[in-house]
Image 1 (spheres, rainbow over the protein chains, first blue to last red):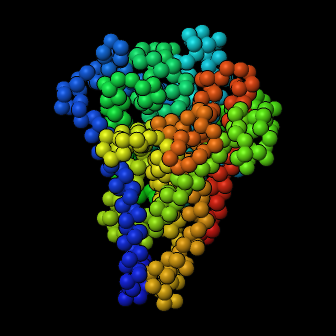
Image 2: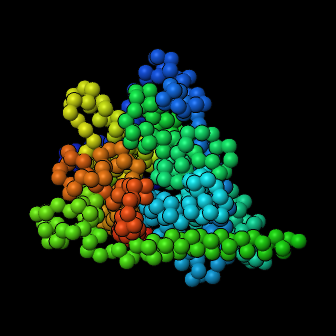
Image 3: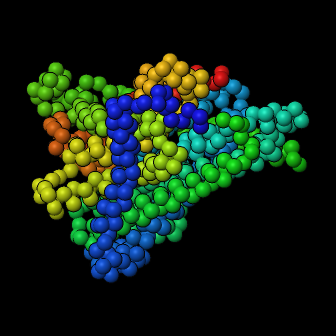
Length: 301
Length: 292
């Protein structure tokens, strides 16, 4: 980048260097924050490692009054709900991207784009609130699924929450595809849907993967939907109609009701698991992104 | 055969678009039907006269005024931290940082952006535990703590939008500074920042929207159901999203439930205005440089 650094006068005044330093310090705040989050969580988990209670926390039963503090059901719950939400949202989200990109008439595409942006602005708690009074009664009455607070209820709502994320990420990737590619395929007589199948999907395959992973991460990290809708029973997700508890909801629940110190420690373990999971997801996305950037379908920027 | 598959795909695309539109319309329609009638003076101020409530002469018991003020304070205090720090970081990453520094600090920003909000809340909670054990035995969760955690949560949005807005400036404007004999800093202050201001503003508004809507962070760092008006930085407070969450589970009367719907509408209006403004600004900013 020829103009990456300010290349004005050679002689930079003292003031300029001072300001550059201040800016650097501001930037370091993000790094310091992320390191201190990790350290603090690890510090509060430390007793688990030293006293050998680690096995107890990573066990299969959560019965605080009987002395079992396992968070494995919550890990399974988090994965089940996120995978299910992704499974529900992903095909629709991708279809919407192609719809907006090449299939829809222009006004419909514009409208849908605005709608998706509007959906990103809807607070999570409102999705939860509306679902409690709209979807939960439906689940209870139509599917006679117990109280209606089930894995499926939460996953459906969650899929609505992560759909805009997936759409926006994948949309951005589609827009980076070289327009001459679509132009050439149109000149060859491809219909829009044939373009999607034979040109756009192959050219953006890794973008699909990134969008799916980001959507999954958003689902794992969400607290309110599962807290309000999944029923919060600490058990394994054996069917779509059982009530489950996620890691995020577990943290909120245990800290809301003051309990014993072991329960506290399980919360920090849950936090650490979540943090490390998100770190891994981040790493994965960077890997894929780098591979993606080496492909030649993109227009020069 | 292929034709049929293609038709099915097109059909599926239309179906998905229709379903999502339907879901969004149902969500908003349901809220409007149940909540619109309850939006009036008593929703905000309960039985208290509005003038007394706004001037703080009388406490509000039933209304959402304290929660609205709590959210407003939270957004303002967190913006006070996240905006200057975020813009400064964005400028540094776009204009000063070497490639290696940009990659490593950018990675930290990505990690921060990926941190779930409940983990950020847990961080605030752990911070208080640590302070209690060491320096301040009387430390407790408060507005200041919640605002700090929220600020960290939204910081990546401000950083990234500032950085992208600056990096999107075309070369001919970049060389304008040196050509006019401006130093690096002068060029940033007088040319680059004004040119990128609309993009930066969209990031700032986006961050404010995120700060207003987040529930998980404040859940662990100091929000309570009955706190009255926010009294100070070191006190606990009420907030709109928490009130909605609370009413979903704890409503006792029909009136309280209606209030929950109306509160949702108020919050939705607040955040969707912020998000759509940010979206419009962003789009106009992008269009501006498309010609080149």
